[in-house]
Image (cartoon, rainbow, N blue to C red; front, side, top):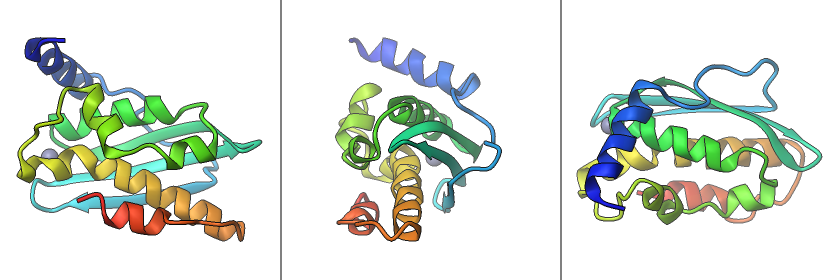
Length: 142
Ligand SMILES: [Zn+2]
């Protein structure tokens, strides 16, 4: 796809974000911010039968942050916990043609993935499950 189409997608998602709002009775929730840009994102998660039955994000962010949060939550919806923990930064960046994003904007793009991995870590840890490298994955994103 051309750069123009990706740019349009980012603008569109930032104006009309997907899965934006709060969940009632989430099983996990986590919030983090990117002070460099002012992005501040929280994710609510519901997990039923080992799959993500509900996921929303809330907060505020720049266009790249809002677009990546939309794409990521859409990607995680309905997936198993195992599949969600394997979502990597290239999956998110690739959806929006951001593979060559400048280093200063990487935090904008990956903040929601960091928040999602941290929420998942909290969920699994609370259940006494095997969190594997989730914490390190979240910390090592950027
Ligand atoms: Zn930003």
